[in-house]
Length: 365
Image (tube, rainbow, N blue to C red; front, side):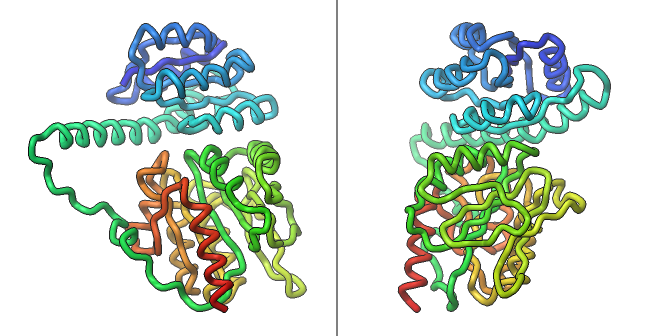
């Protein structure tokens, strides 16, 4: 797997190259200080992955990603962000252009701690890329065989064949858990909801501090619903989308017969803060039977699976994003494999399906 590193700083280019050197099957085949030079190298060498610093040359980063989407569709892009205060807006725009993931740069370019931090962040992503590459190779071999083999049903296939009957109760809230590939997926999902969508939507996305505020503002500009980063005491109100702030757990609590947002700075769960499980548990505690529509979307790991199990005890209805439409089929797979998903839905159909369920449920009552 050939990698191109694009960063204006020599020290970071060297640090990323050293971090990648410890990952089997990965070769740093080129580096570039700007996206302009990176495009030249892409036209000369068949790279598989680009590590891109969004501050390489300002607006050129976004133009570079447009070229990738148009001319190098097989190339995966991982954004490597520097200073959060400087990079959040550019990074969010970049994540909306089909990039695979975002990881934070270490503050320094030297030292074992910086190297290990970067390697720990990159290793799981390259494992996913390796698995994806092997899957594509197997699919290609299967297509070229004269007698195609009968395929075994994938996990959750039975769920897609026929959705079970919806449980009784009145839906009151939609809760979404999402991680790797999240900004791009949410940019497709949230603007697809109509202005009269009747329920509050709560989202936990694994992103660092300040990025969630930028993403919320970006989604708000593009959406008919009001989108904001959640603050303590915010009402859980119909037609409002609340995004958990980076670095803080989000929960719901009942105060004076109203549901409001709480924030918590407790330990990480599943190596995450905010954690999807944390929100889902609070919803199970606060809401009645069949009141929650829970959705697990693209992401690494299994955050949300235990919380979903807790919600299923309260008869929630659950959706998981389909494997084919995920950047990383990790979190949805955990829910699917545990038998906790009522339906597996493609990303492009997810908003429509949520609206159908919500309106169907309300029309049934």
